[in-house]
Image (cartoon, rainbow, N blue to C red; front, side, top):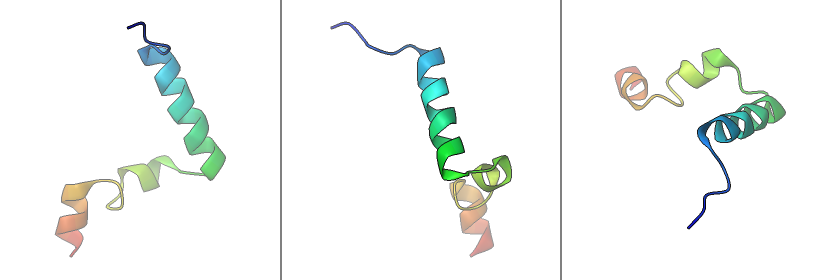
Length: 42
């Protein structure tokens, strides 16, 4: 088995995907993507 990605390449791919869909840091750190924050908001 030889992986095609490393941590840097994976992080770059995620960053590009987040930019493509317009995901902001505030949204990413908010209750939608943080389970505990979501539970507290219920």
